Length: 355
Image (cartoon, rainbow, N blue to C red):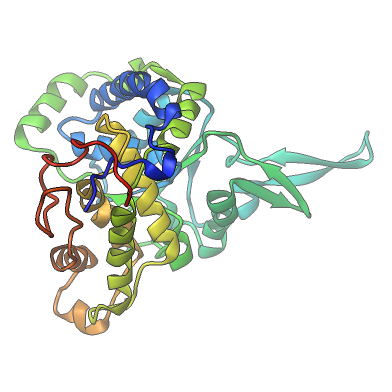
């Protein structure tokens, strides 16, 4: 057994990149979190997951019924950071070129001039993404995975940081198109805002009853700060047992009898990156099994397809992931029995050892 802050493979020392900005990370994240939570009342866990995806270089899918604040959450996150922001209202008549851009013939130059589309921003808000046709939805595939756009054989790099925050109504709503599996797989996590508590809704009436809270929202962080934080998160250490634990969780989805499509290797990578970001948000430069467990449902469930029998039995993908979490052995910390992992004690308390 070994502690999970073991950095033997890093030369026996903590990652310097993280240590140099650890305090700055906490300060910047707290400013952004406070700004967003001032708009989204009573949903701290949703805001935290949004920040986790941002620092993990992922994309966020916000899925819920109309009127619960999906677009407001996306706008609040975007406006809290001083960077370029573009909003795309997905409709059935939206064209792929509206997203990626188009080359137009310039009569004076006698050459084609590229007009960038809405995707050329650091934070892109896709409102009701499942109201556009699958052809238009596919215009996001290259940009979300490779952070670039190819038009007429020429490739254009997208700015950094780059994040797509998309909202959608449940697919059973009228006038929507289900997102293809390849599109869903490119979103690092899916979150549902849900209805607020009675106290939060009452406070919302008091605070937001007169004007929209977005009108007075000012940036509290710069884009270059977010880039530095992303680089610091990359240096968070994840021990081999925890990496194997993430692989075991994802592999279990591929053989589960209630699923006809399990999670992809991309899901494993996204789970690892999100785990690093969650550890950094908790003020640690090493990951714990708790970080993996807390993110498994949000990162994996939207990629899974239940079987017809599971749907008849009203078994959801979220329930399957919870079952897999209960059945998969959690790596133990130093001095703890196998299966231990829900507490903080025992992790990172001993000198580094080799795995």
